[in-house]
Amino acid sequence: MRRACPRCATDPTRGLTPISQLPLVSSCPTHDCRLEPFFGDIGRLTGWEQRRDQPVPVDRHIVAMDRRTLEGFDNGALTLPRRTVHVGVWLRLLRSLLDELNTPTSLLRTRPRRLIEQVWQAAGRRTRNGEIAWLPYEAMPWPRQEAMLNAAATALHLLEAGTITGTGTLAGLLRAQHYQPADPGSPPVPPPPSRPIRGRPCTKR
Image 1 (cartoon, helix red, strand yellow):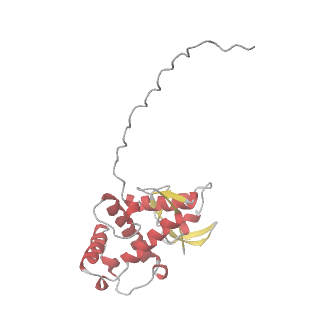
Image 2 (image 1 turned 60 degrees about the horizontal axis):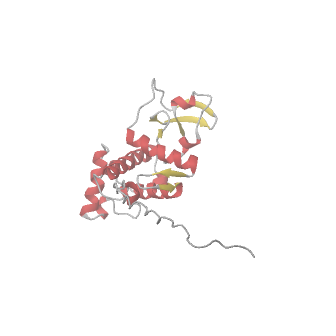
């Protein structure tokens, strides 16, 4: 089972994009719609798991996160609120966030537990999507991975908006730097006026 954008799949200039096969992307950043599972292989789509009349739109926070992932894979780097980072830094940040959202709340202290519950509530889902058994992200079935990505996109939006505060070493990359006016400095000091040289001119003998 693979995933594809319904619009890209019918466009001969795009087809089945490689980025759509990553388990860290759940939307098409070009068409702002949900990636749909299909039967087939790269370059050969034999049928959709569920045929729809129109592509399913997704939340803008999910599209924003997937656009950053696409930018990173296309350029090797991507732009975050604080600075431009290597795609490897972005993937480490995203993977760490998924791990935190997947942590059983029974193992957490009060403050981090409430923070994670706040993220899941803002995403419109139960904490850890209501799952009881813990699985590493890579071992999860796609519907559960998709729910995790939804929560991760919501967490990134809340961090950037300042609604929640991250404490990890990479959290600072998601906070926009406040405007810091630069010192206009002093005007340059004009050079002293040149004075004419007085005296008798030198003559050759």
